[in-house]
Length: 363
Image 1 (cartoon, one colour):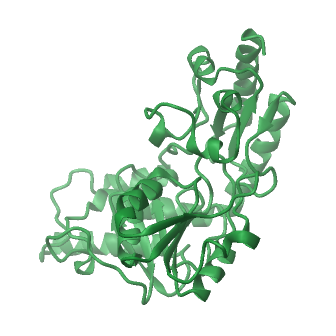
Image 2 (image 1 turned 120 degrees about the horizontal axis):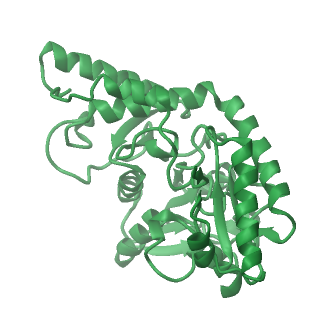
């Protein structure tokens, strides 16, 4: 039986989300129509919007999107001001880095200083976050190495220069405290045990929001396109479970993390901060290891050698490079992700399989 340790790529669908989706599986209902069935679909969407918003800061609104990539693009393009600066970090998701690169013809792009453990150096961040900055974009929990960034502290610096702050909370929503001072928060359903194909952008009241698509009047005229009751209902149910099980999930993940570190042993070294991190993401390297060969040899375990979004891009992870890892260390790195449905025996067996295969490489 396979062992799934790739929760940062996607999470297993929660039974509660599946149940909520079954009511809309047959389709045939456009929630934007005027008849009774459409009103029922709109009610389900309104409930889901409330469920997703329940974990967000007060004073904002949730807009549904196709996923976090769209949400991040939307926020960046709404908050940007021509000839002003966008500030981000080299360890951000490609949805942020590639977007600000495309916009670089109209903007300067500055990178936040990082400490060797991957955490933004707040003491030096004001050199990047200076007057003339329109937006600061920073991830709450890094999708590759799991470090937790001091978003609220960076938001304080941003407010001093009248800049907006965008938080990619895809890996942190429902797991760690969200930044109360963010202006935009992007999340994705399939990272919280919901369906693939839907996400959301939370926008603080008063923060600019500009349509990047043009069409109908859905989502308050801000994001045209017919919403799927099936996907939205699943998203809402998954968010509600994240809120209800937050402490239980956190305790379970912390116990699994301790067990996994012990089971792997001292030859594996953690990439990124050891302390300031989400426990369900363990990114480690082993001297002399070939992670690609390890993945081929240990087919019983689903894990990653980097972000799923960049797995076909070639080369080593931009996040590991930003940490200063050598090519050999990056080549010997793997990411192990676990959560609500991971069992203790899976952690023990998975670690044993990985260690046996690593030893077979002579490392």
